[in-house]
Image (cartoon, rainbow, N blue to C red; front, side):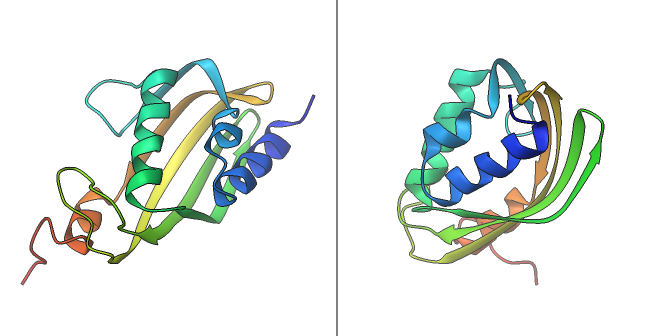
Amino acid sequence: MPTPQEALSAAIERWNAGDLDGYLSLYDEGIRLHGYSPEPMDKVQVRDFYERIFRAFGTPRLELHEVLWDGQACTIRFTMTGRHVDEFMGVPATAAPIALPGITILHFRGARCVERFSQADMLGLLVQIGAVPAPA
């Protein structure tokens, strides 16, 4: 069985290769993902969320800037990049390049993530795709 570190590395490789199923294999069936919706998302909702991300931003790439491990938990500072190629949150495609920075904390049981807490600059993303005016 892979370690959590190996499972995370493999999942990021799969994401960057455009293999959403491979990426989602990181998550346990009982995953609770906090931060992208008012209530924690389950695995079905996580899949739907990331399918919309892949549609909207082509094959987005993840760059991990820092990964800090503490036993079965890790904290990651990341940036997702891509191009706005399809509707996202009601905004038609603009072809604008995007960069979405964020921080996430993953809790593992074995090689599977069972709970995740994420914060990403969604307001900055909406500015980049023209949904919200840039601050003056």
